[in-house]
Length: 195
Image (cartoon, rainbow, N blue to C red; front, top):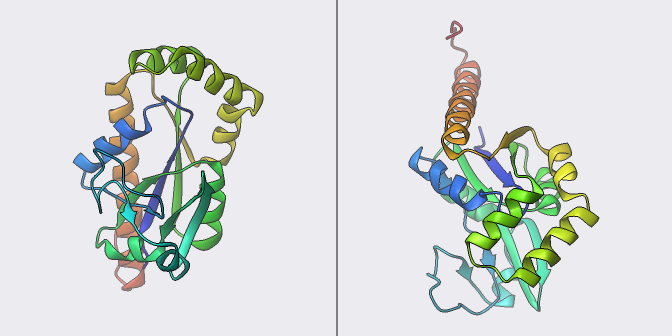
């Protein structure tokens, strides 16, 4: 049985990175993307990204890929298969969701919800430049990002209270782990009762 990939999507400042770090405390590893761009100060090889050449990039079995500012980025099947856990996660955008769903069967999309006002406040708090904040929110509104994220997600978690969000994630992760357990027992031909 192949593992399940949790795909976290959401607008800027929705809290995807914080949610990802919390998933790690639940034993769910983050999938690391490959990139052809040079390493930046403060980044850690094989933790921030796998830094590779364009020639190496061509040979990867890619579940999703994007080209941005002259560099390639992707999530590889090799990275998914490297993990032994039943559940792993990564943060992607809407296009990434579409590509991974096309190339991989066991995918669960979790939309981390945020309002435009919360986006504004959180980006101010993390000291983004005001002009960048306004540009990002205008882009999100013009492209109807929040509604589109909800439409492609399997689950929606409104992240306006971190403790409540963590509780909802705990319930969801336990549900997904039970489903994996049920499927494994079914594959092995075992009889089991509802928990």
